[in-house]
Amino acid sequence: MPRTFVICKPDAVERGLVGEIIARFERKGLHLTRAELRTIDRATAEIHYEEHQGKPFFEDLIAFITRSPAMLMVVEGPDDAGDDIYAVVRNLMGSTNPATAAPGTIRGDFGLVVTENLVHGSDSDESAAREINIFFPGL
Image (cartoon, rainbow, N blue to C red; front, side, top):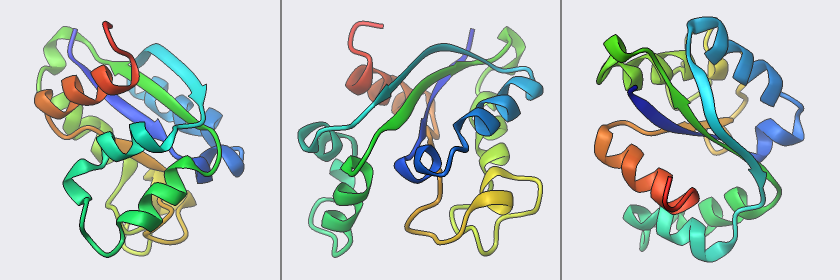
């Protein structure tokens, strides 16, 4: 089955939105094969966000993702979803900026600011494999 990686970021956990977010994935026909509520340590966060090292917002990004627990999830879809699982998940999430995210999306309905936009989702097979290995090694 095709799978991807999703994080309900600390703001989603703090605001009590994890259940709603998971329910939206499940109502779409996706299911969780692994999930864990975990506070991400700095070393893991730096590996996850390594492409942003050296950018002006890097330290704020690390401080945000490590400030409190996040829900880490491996989400699977039906075999015929294939590469479309990324598009399905990312469409459910909505555009990165909640101010422009469509109503009916997670960010459009619940997001407030771009720096705390509730969810992260892998964008390819490669990024999903990399991210799953970071957070769930050996899965």
